[in-house]
Image (tube, rainbow, N blue to C red; front, side, top):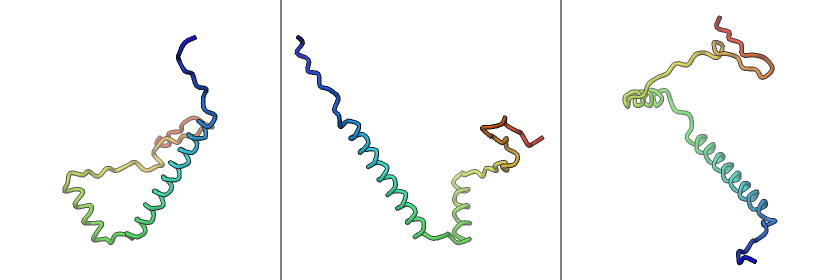
Length: 87
C-alpha cells in the first residue's frame, strides 16, 4: 500500500464554517450598530455646514448628476413584461 495518509473529512468541518459565519455576521452587526450610533451622535448638519460641504465638493472637481424621476424609468415586475411609461 501507499504511504499516503488519508484522513476522513472531519465531522465538525461544517460546524467550524458555520461558527465562523456566525462570528462574521455578529461582527458585521456590531459594526452596523456602531455606525448608527456615530451618525446619531454627530447630529444633523446645519444649512451652513451643508452649503460648505457642497462648495468644497464642487471645488475639488465633484460633479452634480441629475437622475431621472422614478416615473420615467421602465417598471420591472416579475409577473409582467417591462412597461415603459415614457410614451
